[in-house]
Length: 91
Image (cartoon, rainbow, N blue to C red; front, side, top):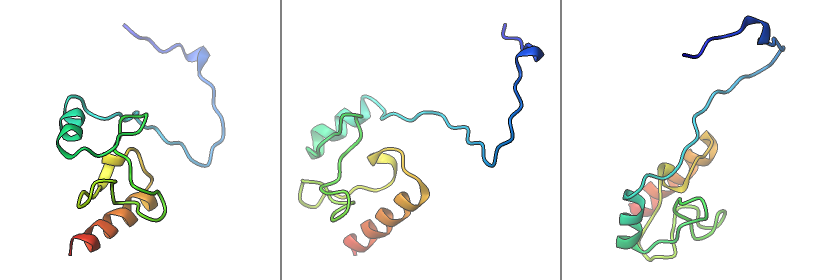
């Protein structure tokens, strides 16, 4: 059983505290989709875009677009723009 030892608590002034759980691709789903669409995977196991700035939602596979966390962990700005671009590419 874990217990908290009050003598080990350190108080520090901060402007912002972020608590986050690490994210990793789900297996065997990622491998299954990789085998189906043949899109490239990065070293971290997430799908890779064709070019981070010029084609952030496209893959090297014609007609396969990426959206959401399939590309890995992203901040709000990184996440919103590619999803908008994916929507525009589909229409």
